[in-house]
Image (cartoon, rainbow, N blue to C red; front, side, top):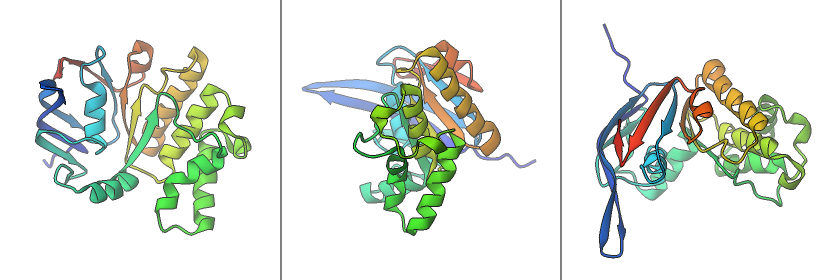
Length: 226
């Protein structure tokens, strides 16, 4: 019987940061498998290494040692340019504070990742309209972030994360700045991405209600998976 390899394979991964003369360990020989199509929640106290692990998987930080493969590709040896190209095709980012550009409309914010591709203008438009419809904001495409509620801004951010059709969505406290109703809407949308579109979602959260939506919850304590 053939076993399907995990989408994310992590073995003995370690990461430290330097603060002056001090070396501060953040992740300690961490190993983890994340299958394709999983909704994983990472929980733990501040400073436990959750966001660091997310950033390593997304290729925006590099480990000190260990093995990290995403989709069968060892991303640790890649150059900055190679990593940027790889992220553009494989990773969608959702942040706690949306990170939308205030002088751009919802449409223009969502289109931004596609400007790094070779897609012609009409195809970019088609992609943006598709994902804005998916998140329920087709009628808000010409609105600026300041004209949208927090929940709507986060849905624009989700559309932006989706527009290049990545295999993995990394979400760092995606409901942390939302009221309960908006948070529920965003979590239902993340569930939909997993169940209906086969996306893999890796979410850092402090909120047990958010973690309840995940398939798997893993706890980090001082850089070690519990």
